[in-house]
Length: 372
Image (cartoon, rainbow, N blue to C red; front, side):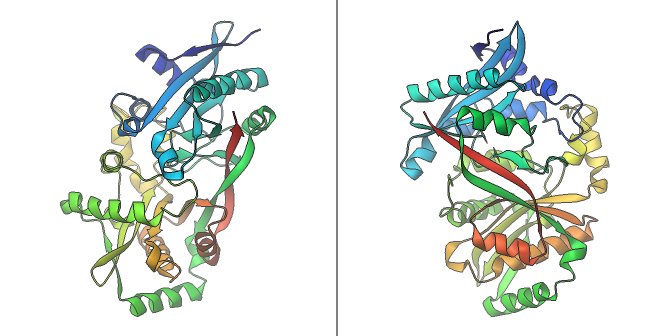
């Protein structure tokens, strides 16, 4: 049976694009259904701030009238300005286990990207490296943590059979409070670093949220600038992200580091709300919203989404102080397991820090690329 590819052209099509995931993951005990309202927001090409510097086309694959796959092709102008290249992206990829379906989807994305004068296709990015990024290649026997990806193992073959090659792997480390507390060096080093640099860590002040957000913007775009594939977030994107996370954030797990009044680092750690989202089947309202807060106390994991130190203060052990503080604060909230993710495979400083804390490299994600 031949595969038919259709572009998304209506709100009805968009809902089909979103909901087709439920077909792929039916019966999968590890899948966490995304919140439909969040998916509609990130795919809203008219209103989401990402599309102020990007374009996206979405495609559905049909066979015999039935939806069997989906993909988005993404042209991120800010990425190409920063890196001086002509890379396009694919994202939101889902497919039945059928190479013909996958090839038809990849071909459609590649043709659209080529029409935009781009030379390579990279991904998956949903829709950028500042969002859900990478394809799971190791660690399939566990649900994803908050804002991390999940996919069937056969996606690896669908990508590699099409001709995609690895360009970079991303690591996720499992951190356990009981293991960390046995490493005396962590406690000694963090105490030395605090005193040596007069380092002070403070929590997010929700009453001064706008000014706190200015500090986030300052650190975020400075700290990650040297990293492979990094794309700065615009003020509008950071504002949108902050608005989404404001209701869920635990202020005690959002930390700023200051040395003599200068902001030098920032970390964002979130309780793993995926443990609750898994039960909501994509619907937050009306009853999911209540469940979100009544079951928060039962969350056993957290995820360190972001930990950055501005360049001139890197390699001084300051990240270790952040890790120590995060783990201790999470423990006080009854959270004894953490995921540090994602970490570039060649980011020696962050990988060394995770291993020093007896972190277990328990999941890997891959970024693929192909010339088009």
